[in-house]
Image (tube, rainbow, N blue to C red; front, side, top):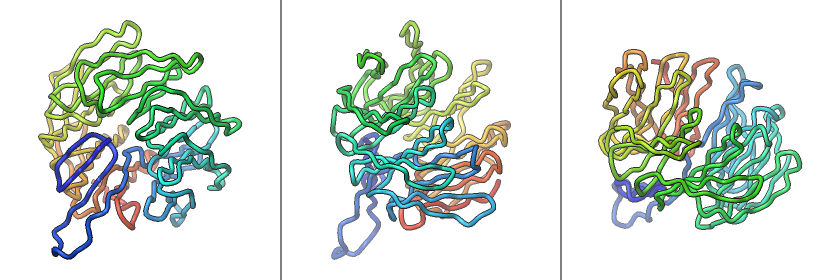
Amino acid sequence: MRLHLSGRLLGPAAFLLLTPMLPAQAPAPQTTVINRDASVYSEATGKTFVVDSSHDSIAVISPKKPSASIKVDAHPIALALNRRTGMLYTVNSGSRSVSVIDTRTNAVTATVPTAARPYAIAVDEVANKVYVSNTFSNMLTVVDGGTNTVSNLRTGSADAILTDSDRQRVYLLGYESDTVTELDPATGTTTKLPVGAMHLWGMARAGKTLYVSHVQDAEIAAIDLETHAIHTLPTGKMPCVIVIGASGLIYVANYADGTVTILDKDHPPATVAVSPHPQALALDEQAGLLYVASPQQDTVTVIDTRTRRIRKRLNGLSHPYAVALNPSTHQAYAVNLGETPFTPLDRP
């Protein structure tokens, strides 16, 4: 989980506690669950879907229409899309449920229960299965995308989920661990993959390699999924989020020193200074832009991936904890905490 208190990182994943300068008699600040997987883009419909926790809704952004809203259950925090079926899945942490939305009609077609308070979500598009972790629980909820029936597996707790349709495996990351759990969905068996350090934050896959960040040092782990051999790659301090482009370049946001590391197998690592405490990345590879969100600074920094220099720094936002992208129009949106779920970002 992530816990932020008075601008300091206390743990890895789910809670943000804002403490503005208020008079002594002011009420205590509110705590809210957040998840970086707060938006998805549907190429089939041209719509961008964004979590709107304040209104128990999902905001729908269309390029040529006013934004719309889809009502779901209490406190949605994360989204996952099956691009083959067009079904969108919304984690509702406040009601222990997942809403199933048809992206063509924006209609909720089903609401299914989870084992406990859900948090992370991922879809295996080939198997048409949806995997949902449950906070403070060792149960993994599995939703059949064809029937919306639910089953639960004892896999241990997880703060992030990644599916691998090629190998028919699911990978579960937990902060308070030094291993990633590899699940075989066909048998329900699990294997622990050593990562080399404690306090795991983010993961991404490229081919047969799984990349995992651990915030206690200045490197990420690269795990060979066939041999389970591991080597490390240098980054800045406290690497958190990892994004991999189709070109094979790896981008890592480093929380403690306010930088982004660019890893290129053909060149030495590059470092770009951004606003302090970056926590989310969004890559528009065709436009050559990387968006870096720093919610504590109310800032999104835009990096030109070709020159590896800052193109623009967008200030005065409302705690942007994720960035949504429409890769067709190249429009980006800050995903905010608070009453306004998203803010269109000026194009750099």
